[in-house]
Image 1 (cartoon, rainbow, N blue to C red):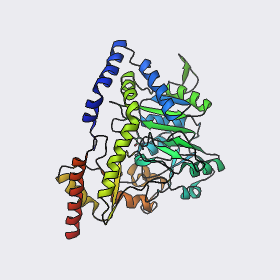
Image 2 (cartoon, rainbow, N blue to C red):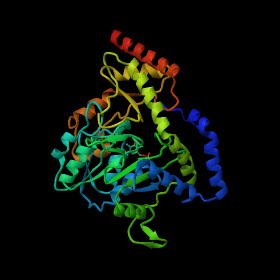
Image 3 (cartoon, rainbow, N blue to C red):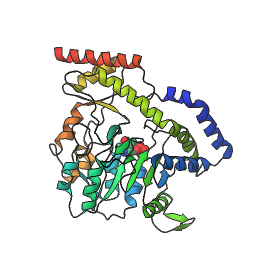
Image 4 (cartoon, helix red, strand yellow):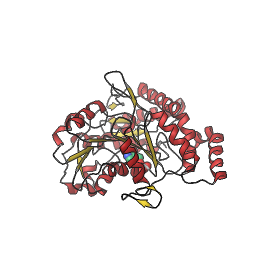
Length: 373
Ligand SMILES: *Cc1c(COP(=O)(O)O)cnc(C)c1O
């Protein structure tokens, strides 16, 4: 699905130098590399505060902890996302409330938001799924009208641009009260281990997040609140600092691959990715909707040595761990339908036309075979 080997070979000299510098400094935690990367990411995003942390799940958890929510408060997200988004809500004894997604972009359907807001709703977590932004302008308007916080789960869309109707352009993850991301190796900005970060434009939240991520402490051995231990280590920061310089080029390479797939996969029964007018798409995933026999197409590709992914096969409201909240089959028909039809193709920075032709030809063969059977 990704080719991190070839990508590493291309930046090996820079990365090895960066890691070597960390080893020589022996500042493995909170070293210069962490400070340097944090500063550069702040500039790249146009974010006032960037707080690095251990991974993308921690980032979401710390973001919610900073909002002083009470047990039983409701947090709205979609059932068509990676489990981490709902997991942190439940872990903090808050109540995950789901809202369905748009059938074309897979992102939160903001037109269904107001129907699920109650007196206990405190926060909305839009997930910028597969690499493009949710309708943030609308979501922020609804949040303001109901005095709700918005935490953007930006684990899959770092680098995407959001275009407001007045012409302003913002980086994904910087529009809500807080944004979070993951540096898991296969993410668009991935390190060589675990990592994550939290962004905010708000000084009070920025300070609070910093304190929570560091054992609730701003002065060593004095703890003003209950926090966690979540850190980005210096080796990972050194890798990320190199890859951040290439992030926009990586985005262009992914976009080129996506355009190539689009031109050749304009076939009956297949829907290629739809991009909303207000966002660019950084193609964390290139995801098709296969109307009939998705699993047969997947099996055919597996047989031909082509990896594919189904993100996500079971919507969260139907997962054993989350069914207790009274949800049942039929509650989120769009997510349920997508779970049966989505198929993600290999998408990374090292695609070329030869690889893509092979994949495209085999998809055509699979569709022909499924029509025949
Ligand atoms: C990857 C991911 C996370 C979690 O990130 P980790 O670094 O693996 O903890 C959270 N939300 C979404 C949408 C993700 O894709």
